[in-house]
Length: 323
Image: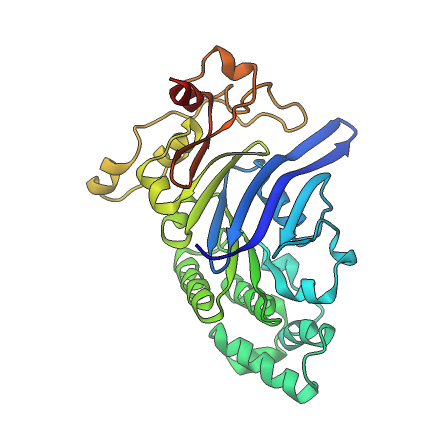
């Protein structure tokens, strides 16, 4: 196993609103290793994007620690040194809102180079052209505005901008969710190749579990601000343990009988995810769980390692471990 590049320790991010305190991320911990892709998966409202924005520094954590190569970076992005901003980049879900409509593509790609004082004007121009070629866009796109590009092309520009500073860690917040399937595949293949060529580490935020089978090295499942299962991608799909994980996997559409055979038995989704303003006591998932028992509504589950590197937060496995 390679060295950790990112460690999250007991991270909390709460938002105070007129309706109460939103517990968007509620005491989660995980580690991302050098050159690894960790998929952070969950339904809308699970807290996965809030986790990403807290790591990048858009939000300051309520409590807990964020460590980048052992350095505590639990501070807003404005308080972070330039070297750290250069090393950690993010690709947002919607490039239509993350790209400045008043700038050309060339200006958008040159901006991080100017901010970090990379070369002179001539060097920066060459780098911009190189970035466009990396994402398979024509050189004359430097003169185009974002609105002149399709959604897939805009996302390729967003990826090129994130790679401009030659980062070590890239946070991918649902980078393909708004795109056509063919464009999704092209971008995923690009990201995989960039990771190999540049030795990048990815924190990949998504709701698409089927995507994680081919992209992630490990997968963490989030539900209502908590992590409920974490395992290698292979182990995760072969031996899902948490009832919520099984529910998610059973809902993935398949195209062959072979794929149907390896899916968990169909588990009907009950109810909707509760409000993070007033989360249920005990296990957050117990209000929707078909396997709940008396303790599930009373106490938070402890983490149980059910296999090497396979962790589950569920009372069912606490009982098996004790037995």
